[in-house]
Every structure is written in structure tokens, then in C-alpha cells.
Length: 216
Image (cartoon, rainbow, N blue to C red; front, side, top):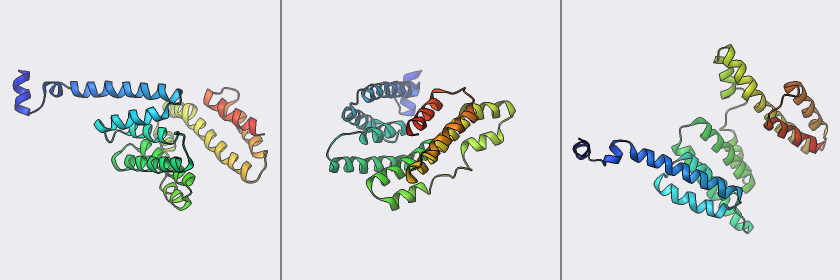
């Protein structure tokens, strides 16, 4: 009956039974694998070509758009070429904001656009986009801790929230250390890590510790 149904609905048999979606998903995974291999080898130019070709078939795919702006910002070249790539990266990320509903993808795009405008030398636009982000209090992690039951609450705090808090504190204390030329802030961060994790640290937290230790 498949050919008859295909003719009735004016679609291919592959589309009717979901093969188009399966093939598309498989192709995207292959592209992602190639992109990651190229990234490790710093083949960013090849990645730009790879993702631009993929976007012809999947023009608003958030992962492809994210991979494109990451690759654009890693391209070598003259200062003029780097600025042009940065401007294109901003346009790509604005496309994520137009077509993507996922809050995490949109939040990452807003943050990265603010950062890109700052590096481009347009502080006014950087501040404009930074102000569109949620504040530290009204975040996903804070809401999950509020609404989870006790078991899930403990898991969320231990596995995610404390690590993210540590990174945020480190980011801000590093900024203070730099602007005030005072390494005491990095030393304070190391003490905070001792209190929060008591020696039980993930690779992520160890990375935060190494960075602050190298700045003291």
C-alpha cells in the first residue's frame, strides 16, 4: 500500500516512512564527526566550507550555525580578514536568534554576540546584547533547584550548579585581579574551591583551579 499512500499524500515513500528524517540525521552526525576531526587538526577553513555546504540543506540548524561561527572566528588572516570573519560570525549568530527557540542555544548566541561585538570594537552593541541575557538570579539552574524534589535537587546542585558557580566566581575574580592588578583575588578563589569541593573535584573544577593557581 506504500506506493498508493505515497501518491495520495504527494510525498516520496522514503518521506512517508521517515527515511528522509533518518538519512538527514545520519548525515548531520557524519558532518559533526568530520567537523570535530578538522577542529582538532585546526582545519578551520575546511570546516567553514563543510558547514556552509551543509547549511544549504539545513539552513537554520542551530548546531550547524554554531559550528560555522566557531570556525569563522578561528580563521587566520590579515586583521581586515579577521574583522570580516567576525562580522560574518555575528550575522550567523543573529540567525540563531531569529530561528531557534531553544533557550540554551539562544543564551549562548546572545553571550557570544556580545563578546564578538566587544572584540570588533563596538562596545555599545556589546553592552546592548549583554543586557538581553538573564541575570545571575533568574537562571535555569536556580529554577531547577527550586522545583526539584530533594533527591533531584541534591544531584543538580552537586553535579552542575556548584561547578557553574565556581566558574562564574572565577571569571569575576579574575577580572578583579586584572583590573586592580591584585593577585589576592586568585588566592581567594583557590580557598573558595577548597571550601566548595573539599578535594572531590571534576576535571572541569581542576581546570578552574589550575588557571587561578597559575595567576597567583
